[in-house]
Image 1 (spheres, one colour):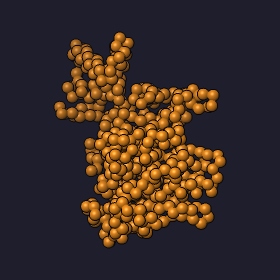
Image 2: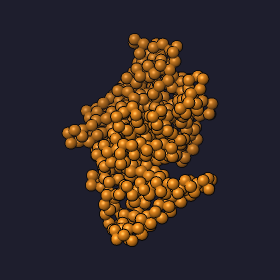
Image 3: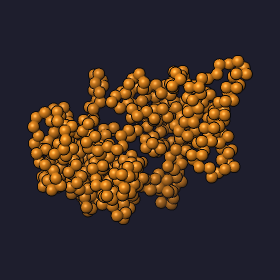
Image 4: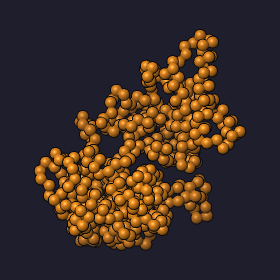
Length: 472
């Protein structure tokens, strides 16, 4: 389904309701209600500090409505126009979102078609939709200063732990309650910058990716058997290529009773929010720590991905899935893959499947001073079984759409010539760039043992015509 350009991309500027269309929101009034209700709520919390979050929100709605009622009475006394019932609802919801949500950003986060939100200052705002459109929308704040105040309010209230955004701490990254990832920067840029990346599709499996044309049936069957055969898998691609979505789909092919650890800088896989699929998942999230530093130079309270990878081994899990490899955590992950039972996975920014080994080797050497290039490549080649690469083709410049799909799958067969990993291209880009079967994997018997039919690697012509067909 694609977003309707007439009904998407205007949230926050105008709104509608069952009583008819509503004009532009009076944001000055929204801010006034937010400030007065917020002050009244703060006073109430001094008297009742143990008030639950749900009770606070209910009280805030009452305070906002009281403020609106007073406004209506004031306007009626002076002969001014009063807001309609629909307008009152919009104003009340906007004031509530300013207090407990994302303010003017809330309608975009609530829109199921929105994938990305970008703001380069308060009035240069772009919304990226699932159908590939990027739409410029109205301001999200009254000024850049107001935008920073809103971000500070969001950081203090909506994160798993209170975060700050100040001159001393100008960088902010956090997970929002709906699972979206927010990143903001101030001070080091001319205007405040904001990006929110949303995870629209969570409960997804390989069959769903066939429907999205990210993979076809033969590739789905191969990847399904790779998970069953406990292959160590690295998912690569560029920014926004769909790496996390594919990793989530692969994880949803695991047996429900298998113990799994997920390790992320910020929760994005969200497997622990699918208890029917993953009742035995141990979800780890790194912690940035405070602005203060201890004698060793580390931030107080900091917990790194490296520490979490190492700790995961004592949690009685059979697989370790790392959301994204970015730094020194690469080396302990490779050690887990190399010495464990197999079946671990991660994502990695890389230009191609072969480039993944260059990236991982460099990250391993960065994380451990004593690791030589030879040692790094040998360990990576020993640990990794498959690299699955995602490509993005953007045809919006010529009136088309943006397409994201798996274009390549390579198997690693140890060290080859020149000390680099020996690779077998199992799936290579076809005429349209999508992955097509090219060679049998060297370890084909491992896949056959868990039920894979080698016939999927020798498909007839017209593969995409039967992509949505039933499994063999």
